[in-house]
Image (cartoon, rainbow, N blue to C red):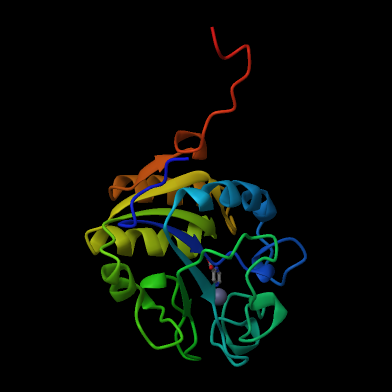
Length: 203
Ligand code: VGL
Ligand code: ZN
């Protein structure tokens, strides 16, 4: 099976229990991306997984004046990556949102366990192109994609590998349009996965 070169990264944005079914901030249909992401993972040599990673007193939580229910609390089960994710080949793990007073949606604000920032980690592998999947389309995916473009990366977003919160109906669709307008390529996972060969499709 052909893989992308190591200079092409797959970014798994916040695929965490709290954003999936039964989670504190469950995103509709979030679990549907898991099998798609697991089919994409073997295609990449450089995989980065990110986590929303909030302290209990985070300012984005309703009881502290923010818009969200408490979610992705540091070291909680809700903050763990979805257990269905094939996580063995993840090269870097980046966490963001750890400061109580500010809410970071972009993973470019995140750091790994050693304090290294996402941009530096990608640079260490010579990454120039990023493919993006994850949660949520209208928040962390969008902010991360716009930052990636601003930082000079070539960016692809799998439209079937992202799901939106849709606080207002259409937020997810508008986020996709915004990312495309900024220069992101919006593609379907079929574009990089081997097409299932049915008799009907082969003539
Ligand atoms: C996110 C809402 C609150 C996200 C994080 O990962 O998209 N959304 N915190
Ligand atoms: Zn959050």
